[in-house]
Length: 159
Ligand code: C5P
Ligand code: MG
Image (cartoon, rainbow, N blue to C red; front, side, top):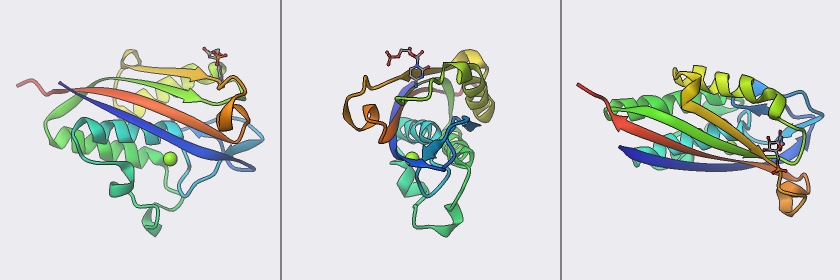
């Protein structure tokens, strides 16, 4: 077995979409960025790359490359998963945390969890999504940014 960890943060910007785990959250602001700024899928992408020691998201998807402008982060995470599988590993489970002061995300927990599981081709029981505020402290707490963290366990495919 191997383990990978990922972290991402993006600046909050009015009028941008707020997309977490591929799910559009109704909100008057979103996250700024070159792609769709889906911090949750970016953190999971980095965790997947980390699990097989393949560097980070910027190495594989440079934000200077017009090919990835406005890209759905689903493509990033699925490409990272294919690299994990090429090395003979499969995902055991994914656990992640989104840190965002508002809006409340718990009403979207099932949608986000099931969508992340669908993207990775996993049963929902192998994916967990947690939400935290930053208790009004720091850039996240002041509503300037949002963060996501992810941990992924992979194991050598049997047979
Ligand atoms: O950050 P805090 O400990 O106050 O979060 C309490 C709970 O509120 C979390 O466990 C989570 O279920 C929920 N929450 C949420 N949306 C957020 C932040 C927290 O639904 N943006
Ligand atoms: Mg990002």
